[in-house]
Amino acid sequence: MSELKKIDILDALRNVTDPGTKQDIVSANMIKNIEINDSTVTIEIDFPPSTSSYQNKIKEDCIVEIKKAAPDITNIDIRNKSAAPAANTAANPLMPGVKNTIAVASGKGGVGKSTVSVNLAVALAKEGAKVGLIDADVYGPSIPLMLGIDKNPRIYQDPQTGKMLPLESYGIKTISIGFLIDEDSPVIWRGPMASGAIKQFMTDVNWGELDYLIFDLPPGTGDIQLTLVQSIPLSGAVIVTTPQDISLVDVKKAIRMFQKVNVPVLGIVENMSYFIAPDTGKKYELFGSGGGEKLSKEFSTQLLGKIPINPDIRVGGDYGKPIVISNPDADEAKIIREIARNLSKQVEANSQNSIPKIVLGN
Image (cartoon, rainbow, N blue to C red; front, side, top):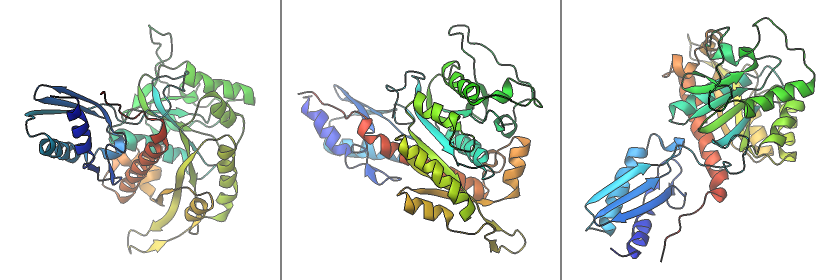
């Protein structure tokens, strides 16, 4: 079979569309390798997490289109290459196995940023991605509680690299200053010490291979934020806000900070958007409305989703069972999973220019 057949197969695959993005899988750079051996074709496809619900359909469509283009092919082997685009692997010498680094920020406290970070990380893991989570709020670490990790867990050292091994919960790897100090001990550090701790979480922890490493940032735009953006090439930032204007004032500062340091804002998550009364089903906008839409329009970014108020989300945080785990059929859990899929699509879109296109030989 001539080399031209590879081109024919690639052209055939242009007829296969990702139902989520409505883009053909060749233009989306999902085809990573094509091998032809007699009457067998082997194809490696980079399936991002956003395609987890459609992978079987995409594979079936590939087989149909290949058989149309090359009827003499009897065996078609379609393999998964990875779970997420490698947006910055080569440019991230501190963590070479981490494909995408995402900061979750708000610019202010009290908007549920850590709750969003935890549920988002777990939702991405449920979509099939390999996920890590760094609790970058060294002064108020809450990730251990929210992930249900023991009060005094033991941190082990990798015998080969000498680095700390992150703890695992609900399918994600995580590290927090809360694992290294007593629960009631305050962290009384100046800015450089706190920044140094975050850098150690990046360099002195064996993260292995990850599709996404999420940073749950503290409020504000200070030392820790600057250390992060100066240390590694962030794939982007997710901004968490609540609907009311008082939140938007500080959140805008966070967005402008990321813009000044050339970190793309991947989207806005509006938390505590509304409350549905369980007895009447009536919708109450307790904190106003429209904040997320205003931000997304003003800064030309996407509104990834709106998370309503639900006591189960708060209970899940207090008892270490994120709602996407404790009640996956709840409307709020479904919304969070959709936010995770939307985020994955945004990461894919931003990484398109950095993913090498397939080159076929003559």
